[in-house]
Length: 464
Image 1: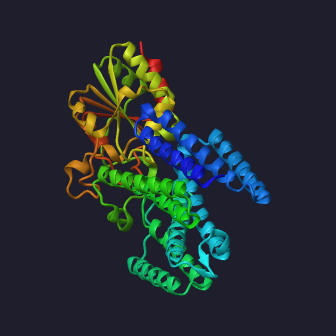
Image 2: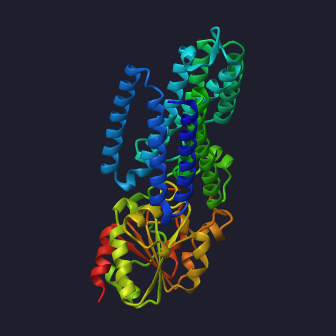
Image 3: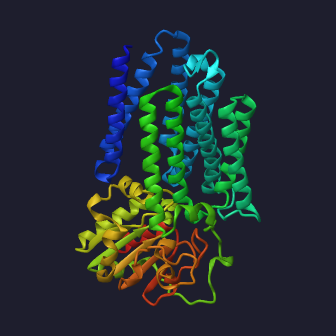
């Protein structure tokens, strides 16, 4: 394929990726954004294959890899539950990081084929790109494996910390920098694999101390890492489409991480070093030393169908029980009774950015009824009912009122200001941050202790 045509097609695919990100910024345009992204990727892949037309054997292997990867991706897309989407995303990030490492290794051992060496001497710029690409890629790989294990419940969601951890991380970081400098001076394979090993260990040590409450930030942070790793591959391959795509993912992931941190009133530095948040289950499931008001589905049905305004606050509990469809049916029934219904989404609700928005969209909840924290927080004062379904930490008044609370300063949804709060939970256990929620014990709160889906279905049955 002519070089000029290749450049134009890569430019078109890059523009489509930019349009994809623009479309994904809003639920209303997300489907269009996905189409742009898919189209851009098809153009980029076909263009790459077309440039291999002189290498028949290479094309065969590429097609085989595409078929295997496409089959696995299709199977996962059809079978994966939305509750498992955060850990799936983390697993996918690990693959991007591993791909960066493998490409950099392939380039190192076949420098002439990649056009990054002259007379057997690896270009200095390529040494920098290669070493940085490997470091970012392998940290993304090992860190994503830890995030997957935490989200999947294979290891504890509690922060795993030990004495001298930060000193060890700093020493390893300095060791990585020293090895990169040494590799740039003398590009020997021993140095390359040494820096790979150290970075692999750092990936584990950076994510292990991060608790469950910070997992949404970790997911978006790893997304950013995977993008920069992909951009590094692009420089190694001299592929402008990959450079642009990686930079888009890296920068958008970084911005998203900032937004998530802002949503928790924490800095990214504190998330990485703070080790906050882990799931702790209260013995017996109940707090016997603090009285609370328990209710039934019939109680909730009577209160809501006689309300004028109901704000629904979904959280991870809704995702676990797959209650989004029943919730939409409940909202439709309430609207039939003349009740105003809105949905309030906290930026860190769930286990990944946008988790609740995706679930509500899957249930065909109108985008016009879904509002972010800043848009709807003032509405709770005029709401008759705040219906909280599995959203624990993001509704805890201690974050607003108790300076001694570990989550103090984190922006929350002010559900306690509604006339009545109906809180659906399996038990009185604390949430993923391991902190008891003062909202459970307020006079205007009624606890509905049951599986979220069954409770919502029973509430719908109780409407008259």
